[in-house]
Image (cartoon, rainbow, N blue to C red; front, top):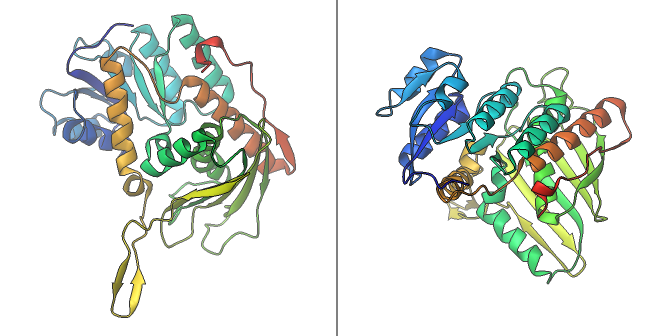
Length: 341
């Protein structure tokens, strides 16, 4: 693949919370790149973001931005249903893409993206599963790869949010939250998820009417491990993400949040992050820098379109398990050679 210019010109598609934060990140934190274009169907919102960046153009059509001479790569941070069209447009220009999760909202459209990328003959997509770039998760992955703890038997996950945003549904606990644990499971263990079961207690009084919150999600893997996820998006007290791997010869846990513990006035304690951007700020910074560095080298690294497709398939099984009850198998096509490790 062609090596990119010294300073990468990036178009950011979507200028909501995540997209605007990526624009800030590239301009203030990331080296080797600058934002040359922003895209949003809301032209005024896009202009408000672009006005803070010298030389940044505003577009309402992603394809128009991608055709610009000063755009070398793309970040897709628009809502999930718009991802497929943006990715296919990027493929037409052979542009590298960092695509926020989900790759697409369902397995069928994710498979279409997968097939389109295969036709190029090389990878173009990195999916934004940022936990792979979190310092604690990276240490846990490195420890597991040494083999000193033996084979992973179980993985326990907890994922809690202060409150669900307006319009949240029971299915979104699976599709928008547990999706991270799906990718973390596959990455940490090196296994594919083969089946999903979802159990739900009586909903918390904190949950909006009609939302089944919390939920307890169980994965089975092709490596013989059992994985559970407590997802509780209206816990009320903070944002927490924790994981503990139980192996044959020991355990390892991340996410306790004890980087700073205070002792004062007869009390001890720390601070609980209030949202994902605060908790994973360093991971997002590391993810984008790694993407920029790889792109400038003419490479594509990190979570692939296959990872995005596999997670979409697990999400579909999870939603079925929530709605129908019982154990639901995950259906995957054979993994193409382009995505073999």
